[in-house]
Image 1 (cartoon, rainbow, N blue to C red):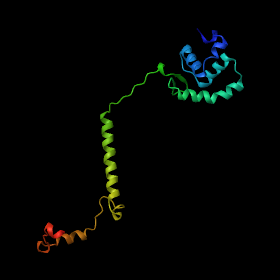
Image 2 (image 1 turned 120 degrees about the horizontal axis):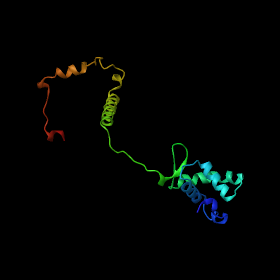
Image 3 (image 1 turned 180 degrees about the vertical axis):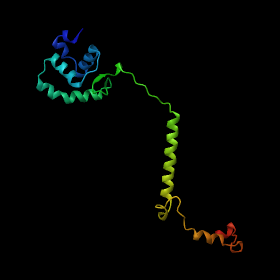
Image 4 (image 1 turned 90 degrees about the vertical axis):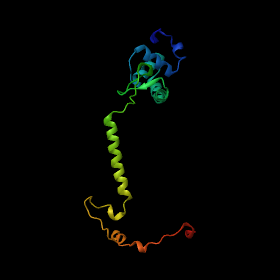
Length: 152
């Protein structure tokens, strides 16, 4: 039976959410929250003041009820009227982007790990390695082998 043909006392036995479901099923199209609630108010013969008093709670009810879905154009519809598909396949381009991002992240991480004096240097700048030259000057005779027992 069409909602407009139902007696008012029967309509009053339904919640606003149930009436919204019935309206969307009957109209077979998505509608704004304002249009849905105005239709409900017309069916129940509610005043503009009643409309203003219930709009907030009605909106909350639609957003929390999993039966409804808010569409991109700002209209509401029944979730059953819409299908959703999720593409889990990753393309080669996505994989290359991930690698590139990873390489960049690694370079940034390496820069962060470098001593402060090297942070502002260009890639072509020479590093003062005078301390490293001293390592080359160490003779084998200067080294001593220590047994593990001696370390204790």
